[in-house]
View 1 (cartoon, one colour):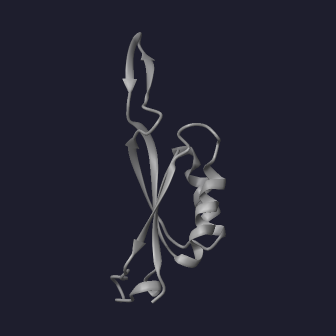
View 2: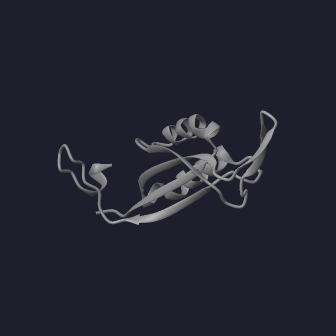
Amino acid sequence: MRTMKKLDAIIKPFKLDEVKDALSKIGVQGMTVVEVKGFGRQKGHTELYRGAEYVIDLIPKIKIELVVLDSMLENVIKTIQDTVRTGKIGDGKIFVYDVEDAVRIRTGERGEGAL
């Protein structure tokens, strides 16, 4: 069984369609997308609403989760980086984890075949 990696990419919401298209072009066949909120170095910001100032300390982001073969890992990381990088704070992060196994529920296929 070839080794697999799970990537969690936290990105700005308006970049989702670009990332989805770019990953599809390099052969990524599936992903999970979740709307999340959080903060990093940005630490949120202050906004004015109806004359009142309030702090938004949890910034809306998109979390993309995908599992790929080791052989695709660097290309996937580079594609995500190149697609979402604006050069400004808050561009996001990519986390990489080892995946021991994957099982396709419908067929029982395991490992690479389940992807």
